[in-house]
Image (cartoon, helix red, strand yellow):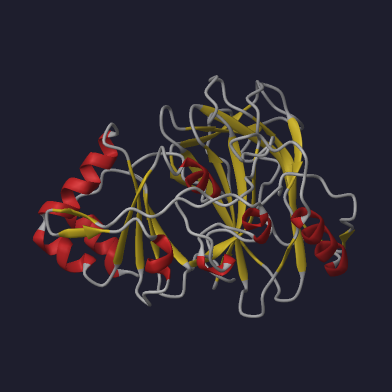
Length: 351
C-alpha cells in the first residue's frame, strides 16, 4: 500500500453502498457478528477483543436478534476488534448495521475499518477500508464498506469497531467474499468525485476531499491518509512552518520532508489546551531515555485544530494522539493515552 498505509484510496466515500457488489460462496470466519453470544445482557461479546472502553451485549437497543454490541468509552474513544484469516487475491466486503452515540457533538459517531495483518494477532500493515456513521442520529442504519482485495503477502485482516465519544452500537455484521471484478468497480466508483462536499472539505456521511491543510502538493503516496481523489481538488497549500525546538526535541511541521527522510516517523497531533497533548510533549521533552529512543525517528508535530481534516482522515479524533510509522510508511502503532516514559520507550522500540 503506497505512502502512509493507515489509509488507502478505498477510504474516501467508503460508507457508500455499492450495488455492484456480489456476494459469493462461504464467507471468512467472522465470529459472533450478530453479537448474540454469550447471550447475557452486559456480557462482553464472544470472539471480540476490547482495546479501550467497554463492549457489552445490549438487549434493549438492537437491530436484529436478541442483542446488539454497545461500545462505550465515556469522554474518550472506545475500540474493539477481531482478526480473521483471508486469502490473498480474494475480495471481501464488510457490512452490517450501526447507530451513533447519545451525544450531539460533531465527532460523536461510530466507525468501522478493515486493516491488513501479516497473520492473525500479528502486526497491522495499514488500513484497507474505513467509514463512519456520519451525522449524529439515534437510529439504526445499514452500512457497507468499500470492498477490499487482499494483497499477495497478506493472510489476515482486522475488523475494528470504534465509538469516538460516548456510546455507539453495532449489529448484524457480515464479512463476505465478493467478486474481484465487482470489488474493483466499487473502488473505482469510490474514486469518482461525489456531491455533498462541504466548504471545509468534509463529505457528508464521512470521508474528506481536497488537499489537506498545511501539506504541500506532492506525490499522493507521500501523504498519510491522502487518496488520489483527496489530492485532486485545486486547493492552495499553506507554507510549512519552520521546525519548533522544545527542550531537546526538534519538531518539524513539514510532513513531506519527513516522509522523504528515510527514517521512521513519529506524528504528533498537539493542542496546548489538551491534557494528553501536554503530557506527551512534556515526556518527550524532559525524559533523557525517551529522547534517546526518539532519536531514530523524524518527529513531526502538527496542530490538531489546524489540521483536523488530516487527523480525521487518519481516524485521529483526540488531540495528543501519536501515530508511529516505519520508514516504508506503514502505521505500526499509536499512542492515545497518558503512558509513562518507559511505556512510550517500549512503543518506540517496537518500530
